[in-house]
Image 1 (cartoon, rainbow, N blue to C red):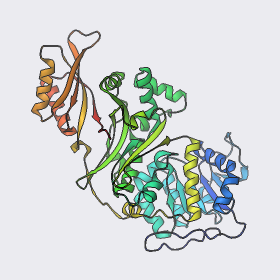
Image 2: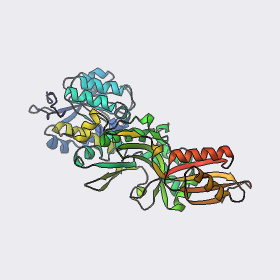
Image 3: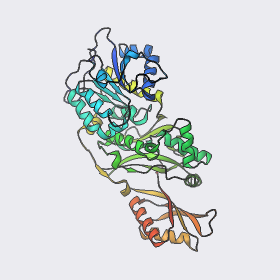
Image 4: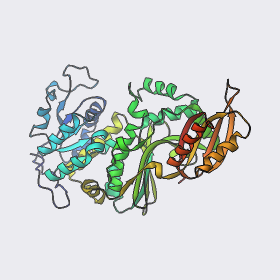
Amino acid sequence: MLAERVAADEAGYTRPFVRDPGRALNIGLLGMGVVGTGLIQALHAKTALLQPRVGCPVRVKSVLVRDLDKPRGFQVARGLLTTRPEDVLNDPEVDIVVEVMGGEHPALEYILAAIEVGKHVVTANKEVVARHGREILARAHHHGVQVRFEASVAGGVPIVAPLLRDLAANEITSIRGIVNGTTNYILSRMAQQGLECGEALAEAQRLGYAEADPAKDVGGMDAACKLSILCALVFGVWTKDLEMHRQGINGLARRDLECARELGYAVKLMASAKKVGGVVYSGVYPAFVPEGSAIAQVDGVLNAVEVETDLAGPLLFTGQGAGPSPTASALIADIMDVALGTKLSTKAMRGALHGEAAKVGRMADLEAEHYLRLVVADRPQRLTEVRRRLSDHGVESSFAMFRELPQSDSKVEVVVMTRRAKLASVQQALSAMQKAGAVLEVGNVCRVEEAR
């Protein structure tokens, strides 16, 4: 065989492939949707480039599909296709199993089965890695094989390998970014064209940037899975995406983005984690980002990840976060690393594998400035009353203004920018104000990101 599996050493490393002369590197592909098709096309187009770099031909030996007769944009030999997972997983000539099916099940079971029979795995599956990463890495460690997942976080933007290799000497205090291109496109269109969220979403769906069911994107679940992976790599903490603080963009209105622009901010769906006093706080939420910051300039379907390090300083990784070609780029990089025996078992990987290196705190307990958009009764001293009631709960305001609401003579809209306060305190204040009738409606609450 091309890959002679050996037992892992004490650090959990695997040795490089042992290649037989003339033997190809064989890929078993699980899934041939948009991403799988893009990978096959890229491997075909890059044959002349990959062979001298890997040291042998790279070929797709078998592909698991649901329907053998489904029309496909890129034709492969019918003999490569199978509907039986065992034809891929149990084939002794398959060296690396590449999983691009998506979804949690049965992808998880297939990945574990591949590891059990000694095959290396490359995956783009954020849900599986986020929710079962520790188990998968432990199994791979035990069987002496590698599992790579660069494509699971930011598509074609390299971030996993830099965190595990290039930044291994750094202490990382925070990581944040835009890791969902669909929502970034929606927010960009809302800001640039004055669209409501639903209008921008419909446009994104027409252009193929959003799924027919966009709930995981606009609800922040996709970004939460990716942030869970980043937290594990940076801080050694596996924070379940379903338990993470998560606020999507579906509650945003055009008015919020108008207010942001007037106040000097852009609105982005942020995935953010930081360590404060040994405690890791993480969450996904729409945030007001200073318009002069680099991350505020990331528009459209682009992704961006900003890392704060002690030696290298602040770093920004940005580029195409989704799509068949960018994802194929990340998948092929992982395939090549596995083939060449490149080691990523650094301090960060061992931390992610062996346990929690820090305590996990609630995002609601982390202080930040906040933007509030409220509807109140139109009466004298309305701004003074709102500010006073916030102050009664320890939430001080730095700015407040009101605006007349169309088609209403009895209500006005109040916009408040708070000073640093815990989200829990803000929520308590707003709840008390609603009960007292001082606030008729809470339009929105957004965190304000610090300038860097």
